[in-house]
Image (cartoon, rainbow, N blue to C red; front, side, top):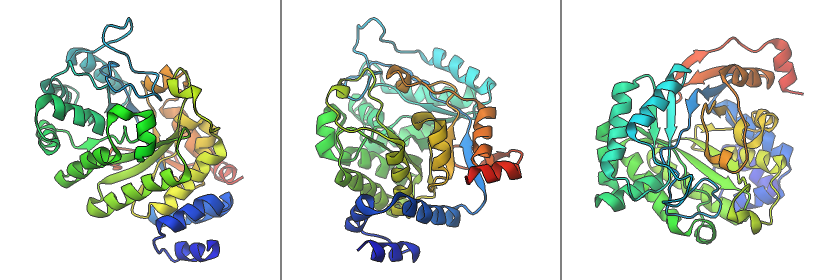
Amino acid sequence: MLSATYVKIRNRERISRDEGLFLLRRAELLDLAEMANEIRFEKNPEMQVTFVVDSNPNYTNICENDCVFCAFRRHPGEEDAYTCTVDQMMRRFKDAAARGATTILLQGGINNALNFDYYLEMIKRTIAEVPEVHPHFYSPPEIIGMSRISGFSIPEVLEKLWDAGMRTIPGGGAEVLSDRVKEKISKKKGTSADWLRVMRAAHRIGYKSTATMMYGHLETDEDILNHLESIRQLQDEYHGFTAFIPWSFKPGNTPLAKTITQRVTATRYLQIIAFSRIYLDNFPHIQASWFSEGKKTGQIALHFGADDFGGTLLEENVHAAADFINRTDTGQCVQMIHDAGFDAVQRSTLYEIIVTTQVATKAQRHKGYL
């Protein structure tokens, strides 16, 4: 079965869920890498790796969902619980813009004390006061929360956010699209169908979004295939996903840390990157993460089918709450891409080219393939 699946992949035929599961379990890692790289260069032929200069602030850490994988959330009244005003967020956005950010990836907890106008004002004022940044705001769980608080349907909420000026949505809140897993790690956040329902409605309107997956906790290989099959099917409908972004669970300071049995490794991450490039045949981009997996692993992932290096994350708080801290700046991000053997290209949220940096040297290209 493995050799027949390899033939299908090399003929660019779509593999089934069962074939994908067999591939994930049985294929040699370097075989996956070779096939994934072939597909990567068919979809993105240049020796280029894109990145975005962005910041990832949070407007509140108060959250009612109590996800056991999260070290960031706080309950109302806790000493370090906070909710920022729109004025405070504008100051942070302007500071990020002054440091070169072109995207603000904004998310927060599900805070029932915030009314729908707060979210609309955040978008409108960002566009008016910080026009140099793209508002990449509000993941599906936040949009579900807005619907519940406002009384508007999910499509109505999305239409009003669109009218305010929002055009893209981050893919957070998916974790693993398996209700068996969600029941254990994020019971209050909703089902897999809820996340997909928001994304489907958004794509129908015209939004673009990313798709994410957090693995390395209670999921099985079958759960990973459920996740990838779900987003592949949705992508067939509207082609609204720009990229797939997997990352591994960070257990520090989380309740889930006491119950997980998996050991997350760089090898597993590279396997997930390569496999997703093969299985998600209708996704234009696969993102490698220097941030969540470490800089060296992120660089290696660029040779396992990934063509994007994520963002500079001038501000990040969620992983930091789990005692996982990685930092970089634009210059270091470019250098990492060059040292991996590629030319670095600064992009927008929608993958439009902003700046093509000086190309990698011959020595850097050679180094990248060692």
